Image (cartoon, rainbow, N blue to C red):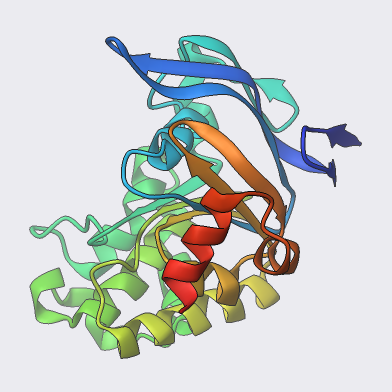
Amino acid sequence: TFCVFKYFVIKMTIAEIIDVSHSYGRKLAINQINVGFEEKKITAIIGKSGSGKSTLLQLLNGLINPSSGSVSLFKKALDYNAIHSVRTRMGYMVQGTGLFPHLTIDENISIAGKLVARQNISSARVDELMDLVSLPKTYKRKYPFELSGGEQQRVGICRALFLDPPILLMDEPLGALDPLTRQEIQNEILRLQQLEPRTVILVTHDMREAKILADYILIMDEGEVQQFDATQTVLKKPVNAIVKKLIEASLS
């Protein structure tokens, strides 16, 4: 299966946004967007503040219903009446990890399993994921405040992957980390992608991060797609002044 969008052909799409526009009151946040995301690849969505990139991620997660157009996941139109079952197939990471401060690390990681009544696999899955991101088992009884920022982010990765989702949505999850820790987590993401490939859709304002992590880059400005192509194509052949300026500002 493949889909032809405005910019290029994507084979084996797992998520599609088709003729979507969305407004907040009178403000148009997304304007007639058509994009598809390739299965088991990392796509970085980049744009300045207010460009619509986070809105795009919220549309995919069913947090907002588009004003017009449709969202398709796993080859089916998104059913907002059964959104919970769809979300169990999507991991979600946000800036600052969003860990629950009153829950232990074990409880934070396994909370998705409890929400879908899969307690019987919780303990083994927690151990497996903590091994995967090199977190000591002794951390299971600790609380988030007892961990460093990088360790908390690793816990966030474990929680997002607990149900082994085919899609992982990441909304600037590394933005609050110091440069060294950020680099460590970027390497962790790449290692995990090699071990267990999945579709990753990453919102970031950092072109360097996109260059390191992404197979594809989607650049947005004022609610419209400016360029969407393979990472090296975007970096070497920006299609307009907006894209060129964004690349130069980030990589200079």
